[in-house]
Image (cartoon, rainbow, N blue to C red):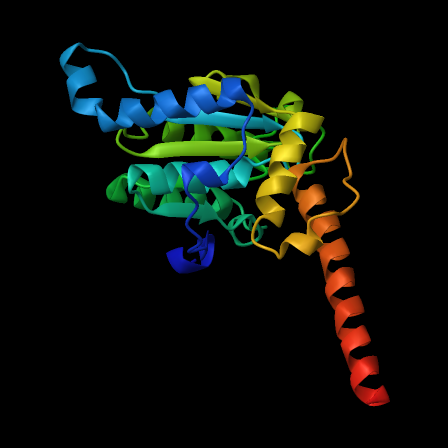
Length: 241
C-alpha cells in the first residue's frame, strides 16, 4: 500500500501553552523536550534519551494533543498512523504496512503517533481468529521499536493498556497516565475556551467529571445556543420594524 494512505494528514500545530496537563505530566514532557534539545550533550555522558512513550488512560484527555505539542515543540513533523488502512486481511501485509510507517519516521527523525495501540499490540495468545498473524505483528512491532532511532520520537496511545502484550509494554521508557481532569483543571480549560468569545457569553453552566473533549463539545453546544438565540432575537426585531 502507498505510504500516503497509511498516514493521517493532520497539519494542526499546537503550542505547549495550548494544552492543559496535570503538573506531574507537564513536568515529564518538559524534561522530554529538553532531553531531545540536548541529545548530543547527553550522548557525551552515554546517557540514553527517552523516545518511546506510552500514553495511557481516559479517552478525550489530551493524548493526541500531546503528540502534536511535542512535535511542534521539537520542530519535528508528525506522522499519525491511519489504523483503518494499516490493518489488512492479507497475511503479513499489516506488518509490512506498519514497517513502512516506522521506516519513514526513522528517516525523517519525526514524531510517530500510534493511536489505539492496543488494536495492533494485543497480547499474544488471546482468542483471536488468527493468533499466528497477531504473533507475527507483535514480533514485528517489538523489532521496530527496539531499533527505532533516538532522534525520532514514538508515542503510542491506548485506553486499554491491560490488553497490550507485556513484551511491548517493556519497550516503553515512559508510561504517562491520563485521568479525567479535576474540577480545578477543568475550570482552567473552560476559561481558556471561553476567552476568545465576547464577555457576555462567558457565563455558562459548567459540566464537571468529564474529559476535555466532552467539556469542549458541551461548552460549544451551549455557546451555539446563545448565538442562535441572539440571531433569532435580532431577526424578530427586524421583522417587527
